[in-house]
Amino acid sequence: MPVPIDAGWVDILPPEAPAQSAGTTLVWSLSVFLLLAGIAGILWYRRQHQAKRRLRHLLQELRIADADSKSCCTQIICSLREKQTARYLLHWSKDPDWQQYLRRLEACRYSADPLSKQQLESLVEEALMWLNRKRPAR
Image (cartoon, rainbow, N blue to C red; front, side):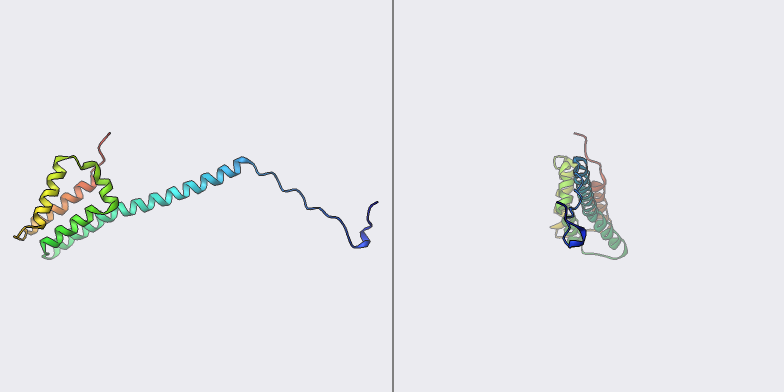
């Protein structure tokens, strides 16, 4: 027997929720994945280019004023040994030219004689050249 509307109690059922399709979940998952991948790419790009930026700044300082050769060599080595930069330069680890450059850099760092301004500039420019090189084909 139906209850009259005037009685105060009416059984009202909410409408059924629409069925969630599998495509919606897939689209949301893909969107979140792409967003996270984009953020990771941006962070990698920024870290990768921080070393180049620091070396260019060091090169500018060398051209403007005299600098201590040992501290300049240390700054170059520190820039090249950063985690992301070192991972990028790992491709060159077996290259004899890269090994020779690192030996020259270490020798200059521990040399008793200070380096000339031109030698320091060439070391920084060579570090930038290694950072700008494309990865070798596998």
